Picture 1 (cartoon, rainbow, N blue to C red):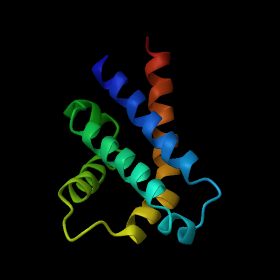
Picture 2 (picture 1 turned 60 degrees about the vertical axis):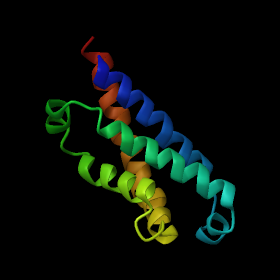
Picture 3 (picture 1 turned 90 degrees about the horizontal axis):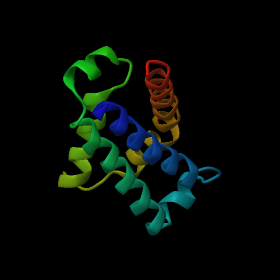
Length: 114
């Protein structure tokens, strides 16, 4: 039950990031501090939540890069050498749609297994 609630929260954050950046170019993203901060916050929340998932759950759902998600959270939160906006943008544009899809599938599986 706990993992289900965590996945639902993660999915909400992922949806927000994807929605915020829909129809936005990297140049527009880079020039918008509020958008950057909103996205970085949501990405850090997603990473924080991965640490709360059960190890068995993560092993069963190995298609999601849990360790990399948490690693991004560490880079953001601890500001190791500053946040690389190009990297953040690549994650948003390349990885977030896939993460959103995977979390949606997991959420659906929870509903089917009730």
